[in-house]
Image 1 (spheres, one colour):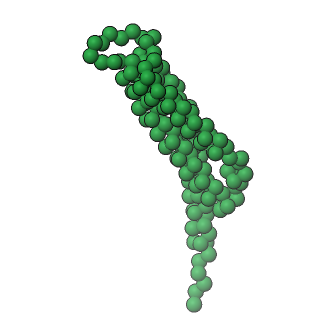
Image 2 (image 1 turned 90 degrees about the vertical axis):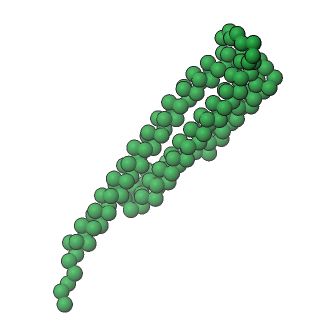
Image 3 (image 1 turned 60 degrees about the vertical axis):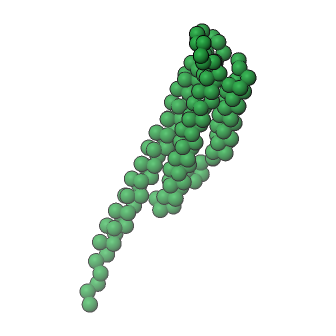
Length: 147
């Protein structure tokens, strides 16, 4: 009986290790992407809501006899707040997924970078939700009461 070829097993193990390294690197690239995207989302949110806020507060003068444009703008700002909050929430979920994926790959690779990294996820999650909730409540009040 012939002895099994052990070089083939080593190649498979080495190949699996290389695939794990590539997946770990890809997860890091995606984490950087979604982290950067979060910083791009907020200025766009402020620009859009700032324009709607100018109309809602009367800074930008509007003339319409049929529509109460300031209240409509405040309602639109509330909807935009919900939309951008959803963008943030999706980014948070993806960041958590890719971090968890890297943590799962670390034992096989002998890494401890993400495992030992302190997590600020709870603080970021709470502060993001509070920010958008406060903005949403503000725009709802402005929409119903007027500026």
